[in-house]
Image (cartoon, rainbow, N blue to C red):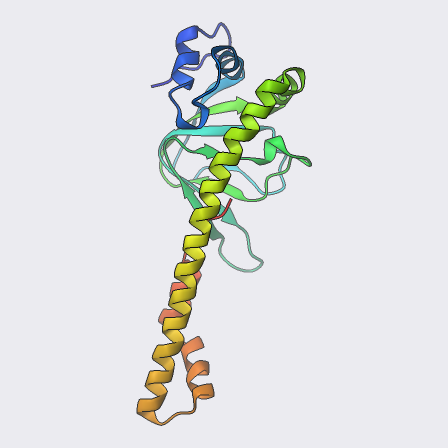
Length: 204
């Protein structure tokens, strides 16, 4: 496991950072810079990592456990946007103004992670444009992968909706109902509503 120290970080710690997929390709000096901005972090099951609209002054690389990204809705339960696990990066908002979180993050099980002080890291990026460019490219690669996952997820949701409509029309034909009445019944079907409510949507 990666052993992060708050000071006197070693080359061994920096090399361990380089084994994380998100950070592969960074130079030894850049890895050392990240290591100097890093500490260990742990979260218990159900613990909030950060909340929407809070200041985004940090980000995490998850070593073990899973974290849910959730969107709050008025008068209802949070909507699960994405689930992140070991090796994945949690938090982009630290890099882009106005530096506010867009979602809540909550541990679904005990989580071990690396905590990076984003405020210090942004200062390093301003002083070293090569480091800033490299980190932006690392983020861009992961964002593309998640956009692809979003596209696949939307396609699956669309297929489910079309299938539900087809089944409603088929049922209408059997019962002698009008298509309009059948669609109304299909939209009020409890199992269909639950399916839509709990269908996760993978986004950034």
